[in-house]
Image 1: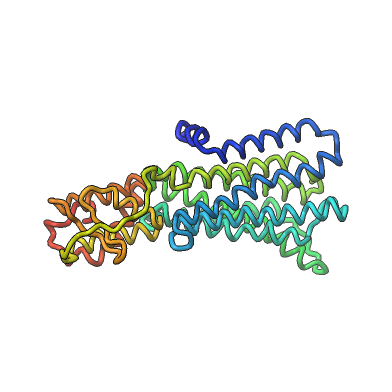
Image 2: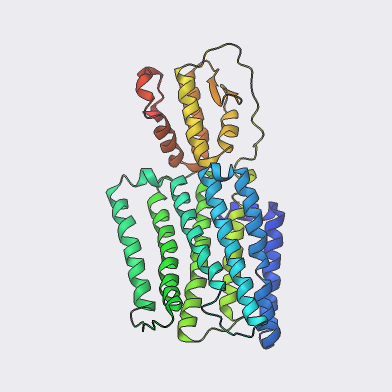
Length: 376
């Protein structure tokens, strides 16, 4: 895992730029610790450039996965929106501090950005769980128990640490809403991330396993930053530019790198445009339909990458205009098995489950001796 990540850093120019910026901002923070106006106000406003760059580029990466048309595309869009909403919150927060001179603006319009990022993170994690084979994992009774108990434990702990001695002031309903909304919603996304890791660790594999796990790690760092901010704000110890902002910068960098390493060029280096292949007048047959269902099922998860992956399988011919797959090899069941294995290379057993689900209703119409074992 570490070796692959280091190789990714060496190859990706933008990753090197963002890491260099983060190192520069860290040195800035260390050097100007005593210069309260310069360090405490200006620095927190500038380090968000890491989130801006990665949020925008994340949308480009999502488009390469098929955008809203695929599960992975939507997940990356959600995480990118989450980062950009953090930027909105940071900008408004800095405006209150720099221009209006309010040391801790809470509640304020900045909360629209900070709290608004959380639903995007939650939905993004749910989509990642779907891509990671959560549906198959939930057939296990143990996993069903985990998906119920872990969020309950997380919410209970959040209530205990932040809200058990809460004193209601009904003259400030917005503050009450935010005081409850922040700790409960933030623990929601971190517990969902933890559940996703626990229930998918035995199903998710292949190239995507470490990449998705790194996204979940980035979310844990984001939660650490949010938790520390809430703790300081509730105890009256927060000041702009303290170590909490350093944790936020690290969280933005981690999320940025986690999005960059999801670029399809690091998933399928041979990715190229799907081309229509002439297959003459041959009829679209039963096993062709099975192959097409497999590719369509995978495309629901990974978008156009599914068709490009199918194109790399020997014995596969694509009719792009009709979105049909033809098996032109001498042994169609073997070609089907190789097609499933091609996707298994990306998501591990989770991809096998997607192929099985996509073909489950049609397989009974196919002679049993023509169905590869992987689809039975």
